[in-house]
Length: 137
Image 1: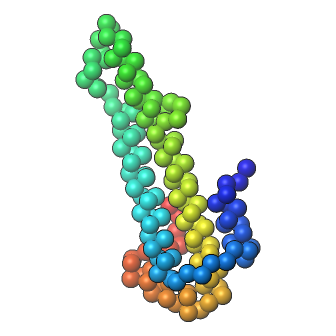
Image 2 (image 1 turned 90 degrees about the vertical axis):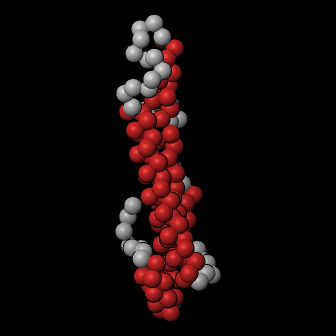
């Protein structure tokens, strides 16, 4: 089942979606989505380190403190590997941010195809912001 964002991307690709916006708005959207994707990736890496941490200092190495072992296992599973874990949830946010960025890029590209002035202004603003607007995450 396609996401609603994917459906919007398809509509934009087919020219069935319209939008009245200035190039600066697209530069801001591109920057925001790219920054969000990087930030989510950094958070995912930090959470993976939590899941991989060997010693927690809760007494988990003691055979007697089974509750400490259970607590550490639950922390690790909540970070990565268990149901509804943080890494997987963040991956869904990464996917959504990437889909939104694709949607904005597709709309912008269609505007550029139709409007040379828009294309020139967008390129000028994007270069000024140091954005690479053609790559993937």
